[in-house]
Length: 116
Figure (cartoon, rainbow, N blue to C red):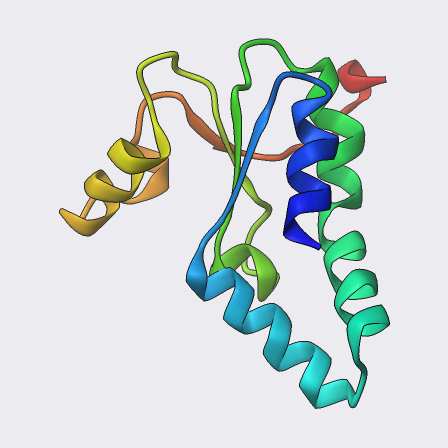
């Protein structure tokens, strides 16, 4: 399933990264609903629908970063925009105590009038 989303984002030149924590939370949700593969697809699709719609029209986005917080609805997935900001570098900064808000070139998905 993640490979399918990776491919869909890649068609727009965008990398997709789901953390271990995100995958575990998606699995927990599906298990809690008593659903199988269709449940996983439904959960993931609902979570990424806005992102898939908005991201192709946003300049400089190179990576969509899905983590447990985004899966749990605490915020939207993070968009990495700075050309030097890799997933590895982003995660390293988070491990050192920075928040995503403090990372240059990282922002959550936002849908506003200028996106359509």
